[in-house]
Length: 305
Image 1 (cartoon, one colour):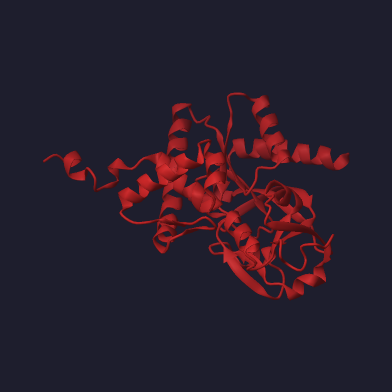
Image 2: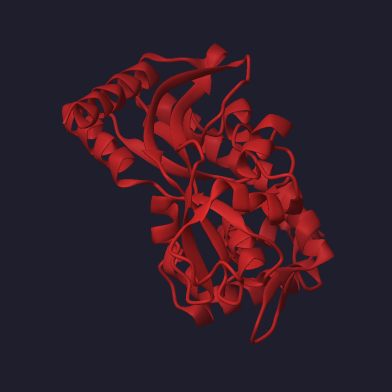
């Protein structure tokens, strides 16, 4: 019996990348419709891809009902193992492309949650200045802002501040935005026009899970009452919608992630949310520095207006 015959139906050789991508996106969105939108497929196709993956694994990875989508314990374990392996695979492909092009591969740029208009404008300007030097956008997990940089899965990333990592360089800081509190439509704050920072002392705030460092997690939930910890932004929003706690977001993220079951209330008295471009100190390249210059110039022009 050949090696390929022995593997049929049992080993990973039969896995389809599309199934893995579907699972990763669904794990972040926890919503079949939104996962389909991100993958540019129908909701039923998301279900088909997930079902095919679950058949290969031999067990359920996702609990789904008419009201809720959640990972099973096996699904959580699978996600924990799959995400870094998937990032490493993408990094290997990107490295091979760079070698094939004589080292002039695309800039792999990470972002958290949403690629904002200001960032996309910088990407467009960077690519227009040198059409041969493109940008691949890669979403960075909400609760692991620095992991992709350290694994080499991205060359640089736009993450929420603060950044106090000694092995990372903080470049341009931009997108200073007022905070908004996301709460269930049934929450006592839901009908308010605004709330004060002092009101947060009475609310459990949803934070980020590990491996995000403690100081970064504290910035996401600065109140004295700890709420549940979320791995992805969609998980955090779902916890807020279910009334498990309140979630601090910057204003553009709140606008982008509008949900009928969540009210978004502006918060007075908190320092603004900020984004920063970061990269690994030992992996700095001229391409990264060039993009930082473009972004810094666009930020300066915007602030001068």
